[in-house]
Image 1 (cartoon, helix red, strand yellow):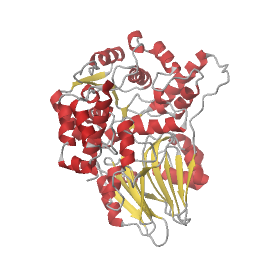
Image 2: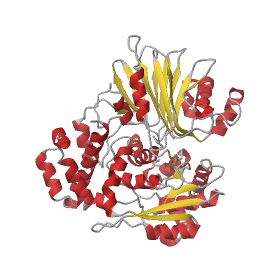
Image 3: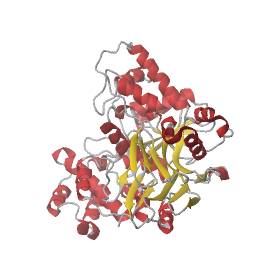
Image 4: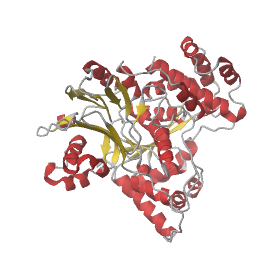
Length: 521
C-alpha cells in the first residue's frame, strides 16, 4: 500500500509549488506509514509515500531512469509481472524489479499505450521529460483512485482528496449540486465529479495525456463487455467451468508465496465462495474475521453464526468480534478519519473495523466483492468504482493493508458480464449462483447476497442518531447549511419513517458533515 501526489505545469509560465506538494504528500499518511520522497523539475513534481517500510531501498519511489530521465510513480500493484518481464526481455533484470521500473520499461518498449498491457490494481503517473509529456492512468475497474484539480495553470493530483485539500491551492468549496446527489444517491457522486467544486476523479480505465503545450487528451483503453442479444450456443456447463477456472486463476495470481491470508467473512455467498477458493489454492493458513452488531428493528446485524459455519467447514483460523453499541460513535469517527472521500454507505464502518482488527496488518486482506457489480456499461463501471471499491480502498489504505479483490479480475468480470442469462442490478449472477451450489454447503449457497451490516446506521437509531444530532446541529454544520433547517429537523425527528429513506439521507449527510469538518474545514 502506498500513496502518490504531485503537480504538472500546463504552460511555461506556471510553476509547481514544491511546498504545496510537500504538504500533500505529508497528508498521505496512515497508522503505520513509512518514508516519503519527491523528485521533479520546474514542470513536473512527483511524490510518493510508502505505506510501510519497503523491503529494499529499490522499493522507494519515484523511480527515475538514468538514461532517459523518464520518471514514474505507482499506487497499487501489477499482477501480470511475470508476463511483462518475459515481454520486456533484456529491458529489465530479473523478477525482483519493482512495479515502477516495469512501468518505465513498458513505456519505453510500447509507447503511450503501454497501459493496455498492464493488469492489476493501480493509479500511476509517468513523466517523460525529454518529450515534455506526462501520462496519468487508472486501472480498468477503478480499484485505485486518482483525484485531480487544476489551479494556477497547474494540474495537482493525489491518491486522496484530503491530500489535495492539504495543498492549500485547490478550490475546496462545497459543490451544492453534488451534495444533493450525494444525499439522494446512496452517499456517492458520479465521476468525474466530487463533493468539492475544485476536485475531480480520473475515470476508471482512462489514460490521460498532458502534452508539452498543456493540451490534455483522454483515452479510454478498456470497455466492459456488452451482453449480446443473439443466442449463445455455449453449453451452460462449459460457462460455469470457465468461470470456476477464471476465479481460481484470479486467486492464484494474487496469492503470496508463503504466510497467511485474511478474509472478512460474513457467511454470505460471495465471502464464503472466496474462502472456499482460497483454501483450495493456498498452501498457507486462511484467517477469517467476522463482525457482530446489535440488530435494529427488522435488521439483523449478527453475521457470526453463518460465518462460523463457513469457518468450521473450511478449517480457517477464525476470529469473531462482537461490536458493542457504545463503541459505534467512536468507530464512525475513526472511519471518517480514514476516508479518502466522503462515503455514505454504512458498510464503510464495518470495513474500517475489519482492517483495524487484522492480526497482521502486513498481510493482504481479501474481499469477496464484485460479481454482482460486474459492469455491463460505462455507467455500471462508474457505479462499481464509486461504490464498493472506494469503500475498500479508503478503509484499508490508512492501515497500510493491501486489498485484494479477485472477483474483479478482468477475466472474471468479462465472463460474468457477457453471460447471456444476465442478472438484474444487485442480484447474484446465474453463473456465480450455479458455481456456489456446486462448491459450497447447501445452506450457505442458498443464502442471499450479504454485506457487512451496521443496522444502527441503516435505520439510524441509538448512539448513531445521537451522533447525527450532535454533528448536524453543531455550529459548523449550521454555518455550512447543506440542507434547509426545516428538512433537517424533519429527518432528525423520525429517521426510521418513510421506508428508511430519511435515515439513509440523514446518515449520508452526517458522514459528509463529519468529513468536511475533519478534512476540508
